[in-house]
Length: 531
Image (cartoon, rainbow, N blue to C red; front, side, top):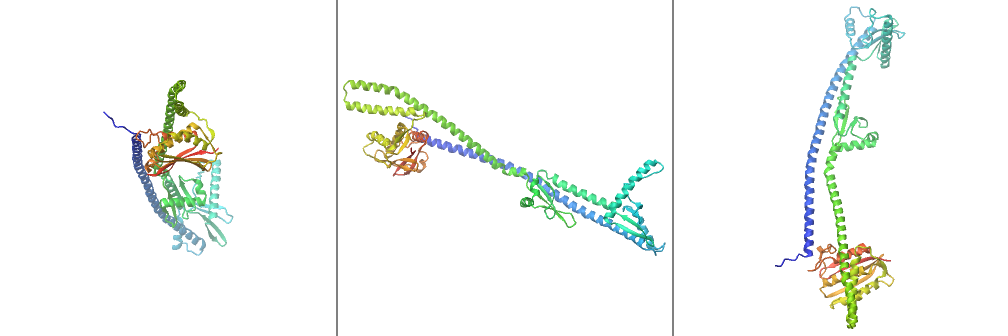
């Protein structure tokens, strides 16, 4: 039974197919992972935005409540002001009128208004600015002479005098005073302050407003927030923002503009014609979630690239060991029969065999010895020597010419002078030339023109090996140096791969396919450093 022969080209095609399949599967896994993570991130983002939306809605409601409370407190404050103004006018009317009848209605009404005062603090002084009478002054200590000792009474009196003096100073600073002309040029002075009810209203609204600001910041959690005044040049409160940006006006303006571009600011109307603004942007968590899929893909890609790079290094190292082991074992296996053949050659020479026969045998044995040396040098550091390249190529052609088919026209176009040298190892260099020339002859199927051209390319010497064969297809041009690739039915696909290893790794040069045209031939170029 005959089994189908699997060629190296089939193996390479299978390798390419498997590689593409693995890449497709890897991309599919990455795509599914990206889709699933993006889906999770979208859900988390929606939840985060929902929290922000609820926060914005809560702030709007609290702002409306603050506005309503502000209007209510302002109305109460206006009513309290009207009461104070009424009390002040009634007091002034009594102090400035000496002609009122004791039982007149106006006098009775004025006294009723004054007597109804339960919240306006009043301190009465004489011409010498001495405190005589006070009314509605809080924080004064009660003095009960029946239950307190003289020392305690004196101490309490001293404390009360201090409180009265402090209150009088505040009243004078505000300019709240009514002059009462009680007899000719004699005056009494009534000093007064805002009513306690009015102050309590102001303090209550201030507390409500401060609580509102605290809630704006505290309930924002991880959301960056900036609370500004109407002109947006003064910061009232902030959260999750770099304080350095708040100190610099330019950075502050940029920050507010960026926040405005993300979300419209919340307007806080206090009901007095002035407005304030709450700027906010997406939280750090939301920003991180937005970029998480991209970071994930980059991390996976980096991991795959590093893994592929390490795998390639290990694979290349393994291939090198195989190359070296195979080469040295081949050289060892050839060494023993080669020594024996040299012995038999000496025996033949003693038997008076035709000299031409022995001379040809010597050439072939020397050639076999050179091949053995080539294999033995693989894996070890070759001994590079400066050689005149033209002479080296002519020496190679002297040997190779006898093994070229008669229908192949072999030409050497030397563009170098006899002084141009390169660091080479002669056996390995000849091996490269032999591989290229044999491939060219096979491509021409034993008929055509084979040309070796040399010249200078900057600081390098080039050697071109050109043929007039069938050329290399476009899809195969990137594969020609891959191990196992061959266009021959019974080829191993190692010649060009070995040649590249010799030129690149051992001679620090380059070898590549310079040009190829289907049906017109190909040109391979070798670049070596000039000495």
